[in-house]
Image (cartoon, rainbow, N blue to C red; front, side, top):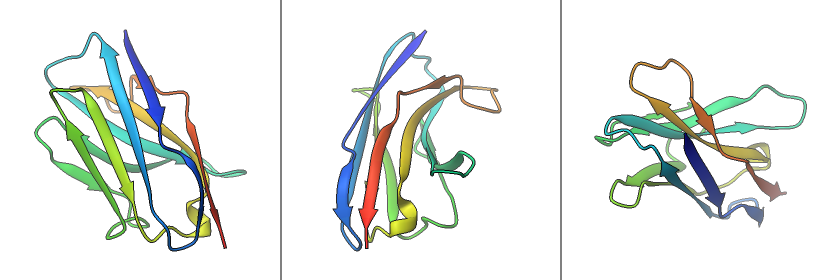
Length: 118
């Protein structure tokens, strides 16, 4: 089992920044991918960004150039720095953990609300 605890959501004006953090604990594998998904009201959950333990990254087109994902392997923590936020970034953001070979996340955090006002 892997537990994921997120922090850092909140309310920000358009153009502002927020940083999300997610700490993983439990049975952490030596090879894994951590990431962030989001779900806006009335929309499907979508991948925002993910990062392998070796720091290979993958971003949704909608956030490229504005969001940066990073991780601290010693702390089993992943971060999402979100800059130039837009109202359409408003969503619940979920931290995820995916084992090697898995096509979808094996574990999800409880979610943290990000609200961007115009």
